[in-house]
Length: 156
Image (cartoon, rainbow, N blue to C red; front, side, top):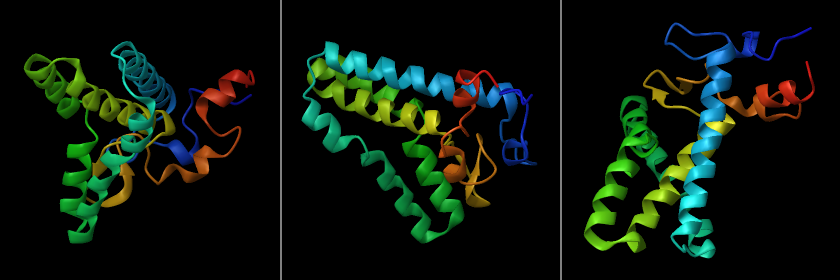
C-alpha cells in the first residue's frame, strides 16, 4: 500500500531541497488554504469577480525574466510568487486607500496559493522545473490519482 506521505520517485528530494512526502503534501494543502482565505477575503471586501478572473494569472508575467536567462528568470519568478510581496503591498494599500486597492493583493495571494496547491514552487536558478516543491515540472503530477491529496481521498 502506497502512503500518500512517502516520497515517490517523482517526488524524491533533490540536492536543491525539493520537498517530498508529508512536507510536500502539507505545503500543497497550505497553498490550498491560502487560496481559499484570499478568495474569501476578496469576496468579503466586495471584490468584482470579473476583475479577479482577469487578473488572476497576472503574476505569471514574472516568467518573462526567463527570456534573459535562468538566474534572472528564477529571481523575477520568485519575486512574483512569494507571499511577502502581496502581504506587504496589501497592508500598505489597505492603510493608504482602504480595501478597494488592497483587493489586488488578495488576487495575487490567491494566485500564489493556487500555484502551491498544484505543486508549483519557488524556482532555483538551475532550471525552471527545479523548485522547492518538486524536482521537475509537475505536469505529470496533475494526472488524476497522482496528486497526494487524491491518493489520500482514495484511501491509498
